[in-house]
Image 1 (cartoon, rainbow, N blue to C red):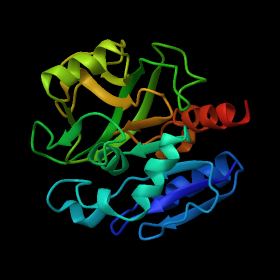
Image 2 (image 1 turned 60 degrees about the vertical axis):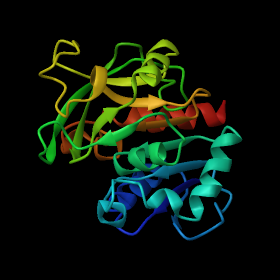
Image 3 (image 1 turned 120 degrees about the vertical axis):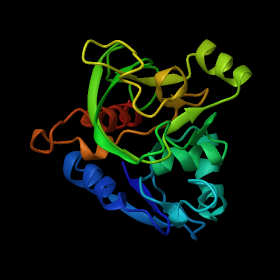
Image 4 (image 1 turned 90 degrees about the horizontal axis):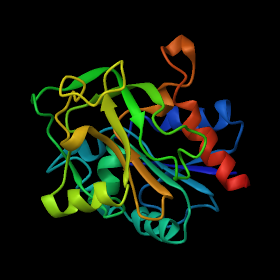
Length: 230
């Protein structure tokens, strides 16, 4: 299975995503420059974290117009797996691949810390090996991670089971204290209706080894590998 990691001006987690594919999963991976129109026969697309275009206007708002995003959208429409991590999540929302938007953190401060998230939906290509209610610890590093939607969209997101991850405390409860950036309903990640596109603010590619504090991110990458090989 070949991974394609899109690099935008300002991406800084693209090498981490390449490492996740090549060293953790032992799968081939290539970087895809954002101006390209060619996905180079990649099976899985990663929109990595970083600060594309310096987060000017709004995080992800410029990157969504990069030429390669047309190819990413077509890949997603065909059912191909796509994951947006942090800035990649912001880009995926801005591009309409996922519902909602990411706004400035409620405290208006950049946050860099480990968080606990709870798996709400195992029916995606990125959580197929998870257990519903499973808690995962991963780091966050963002200033614009407050998930926001209008009231009618929130009703659809919740009603149709599009929430994939929520911020929770050590006991697994979605408390206000655990909701570090003030996201609506503690939402840390969502999926599209088909379940092949997932976005989340925490960084699974930075949680692949206990030496880094957690290996909980491995299950996301192993899940997509399992679904592609199924």
